[in-house]
Length: 273
Image 1: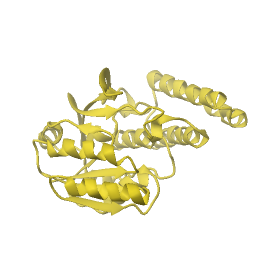
Image 2 (image 1 turned 90 degrees about the vertical axis):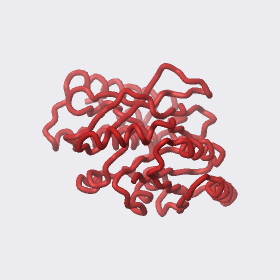
Image 3 (image 1 turned 180 degrees about the vertical axis):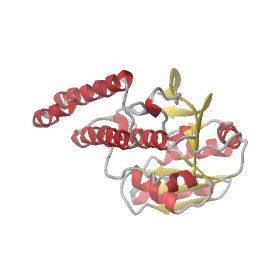
Image 4 (image 1 turned 45 degrees about the vertical axis):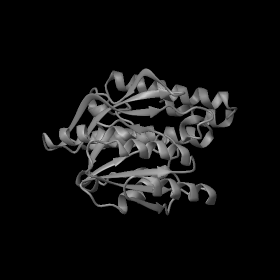
């Protein structure tokens, strides 16, 4: 049985589309938990109504923390099935998602399995994807999977004490996916497309739709957390990984300049080294 955990903050209309994609699943061995992340009272009422219209039973709970990572962790605490899929409210699972991933999982003893998600930009599918086979050093400093790409073993998460980082506002999904790869010896990747990822834009209301000072700092922290975890596990990043992380740090420094965070730019310059 799979626990599907959906954090939601406002945007009730998008939640309806996400839940509709669950109704279309060929595998029915799952339960849904929607975690309300401090939506307004009006939005909370709309979310409750949409959940009640779902063709099945939804456990709607209110997060005790703030932010998507806290909502995901809280949903995990309140569920108990052996497989876990976190699923964002603005994305869509294709009908084959759960059946495909569960069959792959049961073909061997894995900690988690990953299938691909195609990017959906302004309602149009484009030739970009989440989900890939990690390169050297178990994928560290890459973005091996987006939230909905991975079906994960609950015992693996509990034994390795892997949780969503509630201390950062941005790039927590990047940090989470890298930590899973670093701590796992048994995982599988499938090139099959099983989901659509809704690319955020300036009007989407997504946490990834814009950068501010706090989000830039969060991304620096995520990079540094993974670097420490690599070192703890005696993993030395190769040239490919080092170039990726340098490019991302330069991107963050450039974002500081574009947004006028000049003092923070000077403070963060040393992070290149």
